[in-house]
Image (cartoon, rainbow, N blue to C red; front, side, top):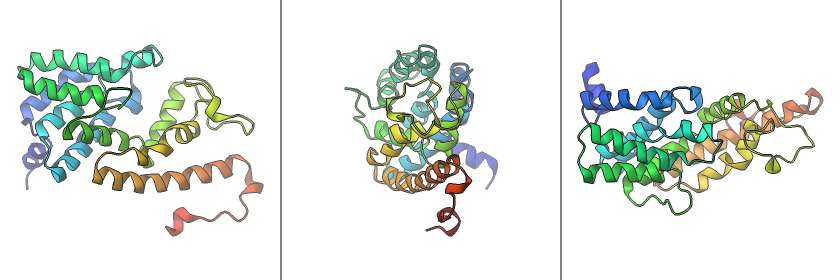
Length: 240
C-alpha cells in the first residue's frame, strides 16, 4: 500500500478539501500549545474516524467536525472559561464551512457535533456522529495522553507540580496555582469513563482509566517522600 492510500483513509472528505479545512482551522489553534493545539485535533480526528468506521457513521461529518471542534478554544482560554469554546467553535465552523461551499444540511450536522462535544447543559449530542466526537475528544483527555495534557495545561496556567498535602483540591479554583494535573484527575479525568456514549468509547476509556489510577497513586506516594515508598506495589511493571 502506498502513502496515498493512508492519506485517503484519513481524509473522507478527500485529500484536497481536508487540507483546505486544516489550513482555515489552524490559525485558531495558535497559542494553544501542546494541550489544545493541532496535535490534539489530529488525535481526536483519528480516534473519531476509527470509532466512526466501527459504527457505520458518516465519516465526512466526523472528519470536518473533529478538525474544527476546538477552534473556539482560544476565546475560552482568553476569558478564563467565561466563553464556551464549543458554542463559539460552532459559530466559527459555520463561517469556515460556508467558505468551502458545504451545503446547509451538512453544515448543520457538523456544527451540531462541534457545539455539543462538551455535553454541557442543554447542549446534548443527538446524532451518532456527535456522540462519537464527544467520545473521541474525551478519550484524548485520559490515559497516558490525558496525563501529559493535564501537566501541560497546569504548566500553561502556572500551577505547581502537585498540591500541598493540606490543600482540599476539590475546593481549589481553576486557573490557579493549585489547578494541578492531580486536581484535574480527581475533579474531571477520573469521572470520564462513566460518561462515554459509544460501546468502543467505553471500552477504551476503561483501559485508559486503569492506567491513570496506577500513575496518580504512584505520584501521590512519591510526592510524600521516599520514606513512604516502602512496600509500594509496582503494578505498572507487573501489569496487575
